Amino acid sequence: MKISAGMKGIVLVIAMLAAVAGFATSLDFSINITPEFTIPVGPDSAMFTPGGGGTLTADLEFFGFLAPTLEFGVYINPLKNLDKSVILTRFGAGVNYFIYPIPRLKLRAGVALGAYIGSYEEVYTANLFWKAYVQAGFRFTPTFSLLVGAGFSRYESSPEPFYTGIQLGLVADIQLSSLGKKDAGVSVETSRDFPVFPILYASYGSRPIGEISLTNMEQAEIRNVKVIFNAGNYSSAPMLCGEYPLIRKGASVDVPLYALFNEQMLTFTENTKIQAEISVSYELLNAPRVATVSKSLPLNHRNAFTWEDDKIAAAFISPNDPAVLDFSKFVA
Image (cartoon, rainbow, N blue to C red; front, side):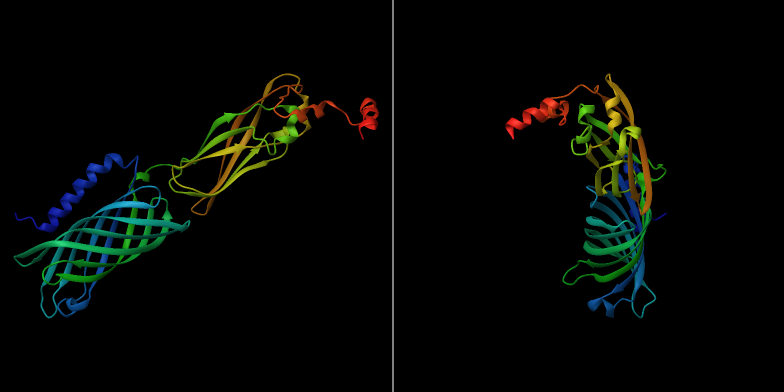
């Protein structure tokens, strides 16, 4: 049985996808399935009529905005005034740049270069091709987007290009690395704890009591992130510790913790620990989410202090003490 060049290409792409499947769970790996409508331009419009075909593309995303690609495509281009077609089979590599200007909108632009085989009945030719394209679409979930795209392709030959055309298509973008995964939310890990002195309770609105590492474990970037600390009965109110407009998938930020403590902090006569709460609110594809974790906060007793700031001596002096009032008469 004779195997066509197109069938060989399909087998090659399937083998390539199988080879990288083992890495798909740890990398941002996706495939794009793109049926397209082709329109010949320039001198080729006198020889060809509009045709169609499709491309299978594998992307490996880096840095949240850049993706090298491998692609395989087959296109059927009917000849004008003839009941016959030229079949173009191509295999290439490229790179694309993508952004998410708003949570559910994906924009992408890229270029590719590779080799093609043109076949007409029993006649074959081969050379290089290149293309450029732009795409825009809607993210239904973190794992699936549907985009519309337009591109320009040129199949080189000598002395004139073999075929030049515009492609219009619909792109099914599937994130294989996230398929089957459950939402993991965010990870909150304590990086550092600083000594907390109840006598300085009023200063911890601007003096950090510790630091956490916040990691985005969701299947996509998260937006409008707010981190709030609350020590329950020992807080006057929850304290906003940090705001972040965007944290990319897998990225981490260090968040200093602050607290609005109240006078209940002065009831501790021995070193102890209290239970506090860290709340992280954010949006995933416009859907609000909240993650809450408990934190054990070590405290010194109420008479402990530090000489990092010598103004702390004022904490042991009452402005209405007779001795202070008498002394102030001589230094005023």
